[in-house]
Image (cartoon, helix red, strand yellow):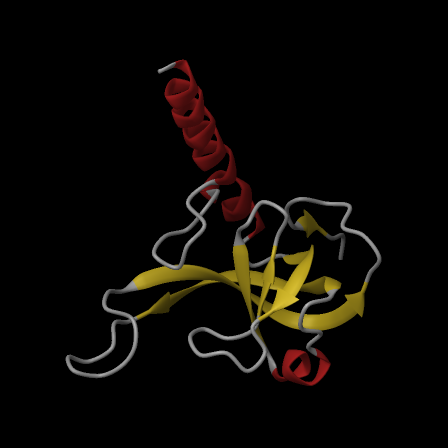
Length: 134
């Protein structure tokens, strides 16, 4: 019984620490909200090139996904590599797919980064996006 309680405690702690990091809600609002509309650098694993859904993204060390927009990124994508991406962060909204069509069943908001530059890096030094000085 003690092991089950310990597992439950760890699961709750991880969920609380990492936030709700899926496409059906915004994770870590207290961290991202002050950064909205500002130029930031985000570091993480580049993923999603050629996949369905919202497409290319950076998965931060916390597990939160930031979806990437802008024509520069599609030419610079580095699937599976550690990257540092600079751009302006925003919240985008996805409407559900029409009945009978493939797609998301409900509406949701997600974080997006309008990409200005992409660099492959050797290691991630920041868990969350960092605000850049102009």
